[in-house]
Image (cartoon, rainbow, N blue to C red; front, side, top):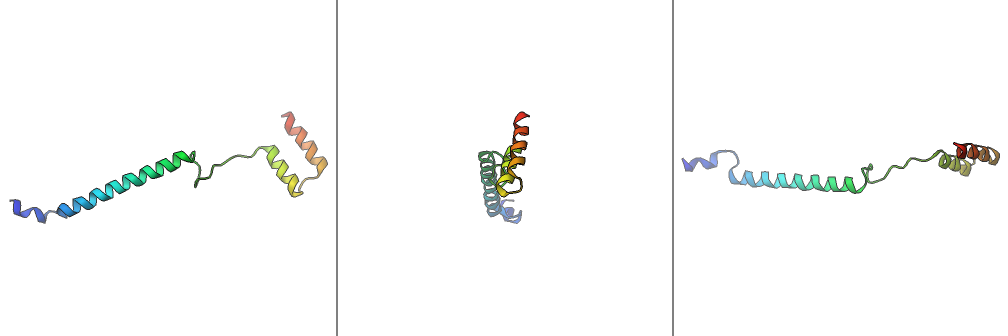
Length: 81
């Protein structure tokens, strides 16, 4: 009866490998969870910040896409809102 223990699956060695895989997965899941919570749920460690309309207008003015008069008018319109 006891002599046939080696014939069932991988035996003690298989249990050791399975235990190492289990704890490895648990540690990896914990590391991923900690990184995700520390980054505030951002993608790839980068926080996503939405720009305001005024920020976008300032960027367009800096690139020269908007003239000064148009910039001032739109800035006043945005500040009224």
